[in-house]
Amino acid sequence: QFQLVESGGGLVQPGGSLRLSCAASERSSVPYYIGWFRQAPGKEREGVSCVSDDASSTKYADFVKGRFTVSRDNAKNTVYLQMNRVKPEDAGIYYCAAKWDPEPGICTVSIGRGQDWYWGQGTQVTVSS
Image (cartoon, rainbow, N blue to C red):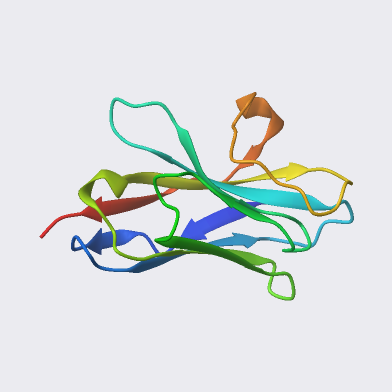
């Protein structure tokens, strides 16, 4: 069964760095793109970044542009989110999610209907000095 497992969360100081990983349990015969989302306590889940199936396209929310970098290693079935210059407002639970789409080179950071995505369990990011 296809599963997504996030890892790499933890405590980071403001201005520090953290790398999150999203590992798929198996290859998929249908192309899918990966979105990274986050949810802070009392707030709605929001899109952070995404990467297309072939890694040719990436997108970022304005609040992480220039600080976060998403990458994908299909040989390892893993997507990464490198978080640099972390801010206190970056704290929250980070989720990766997959959406299958045969069209190459696309992805979106818009959640749309949550049930259209296949979600991982999330990993906690805490920002504190």
